[in-house]
Length: 203
Image 1 (cartoon, rainbow, N blue to C red):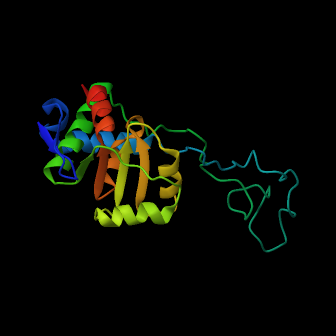
Image 2: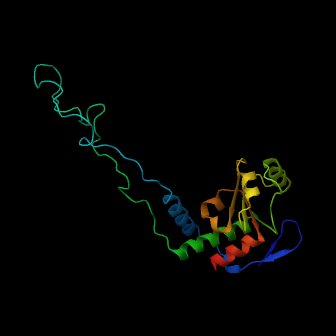
Image 3: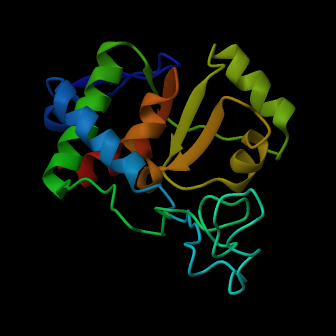
């Protein structure tokens, strides 16, 4: 299939298998869920009554105090005591099984849907001469791309530095593209070099 370049200078040829795939909502949902699940840290930790410091001595005598019986200050009923069912790091896994074929298929579905919705913009090249946010913002304003993911063949340091202070603008290379980044922006600006790299990776 042919993708028109944003400047009207011509078209770029891309493979139908990667950029003209029928959208599979269930597959995309499963892959996005799996990708987000891998980002969970699993670092929460609470102490049981055995791990709380102190609690070896009986707080007060058994009878005659008009208070409930207590044998230790580390009881879960006491403030500062241990938790009854304490959470531990990596006590359960949130990871969802997704094989390589499913991941590639979901990426093809997303890219194809972006093209159908006119949210994917192809460009011969895209760069800034100096690392200035104002310069990049002016270019994106001229292209009417306030919320955009810029995908280039290689990371341009000037482009990366210029985009880091723009709220809705992200920059990555073809290897750094993921399903969440593609879906979280209104537009995706992809250079020809990045398109060819994505085509080769998803073939």
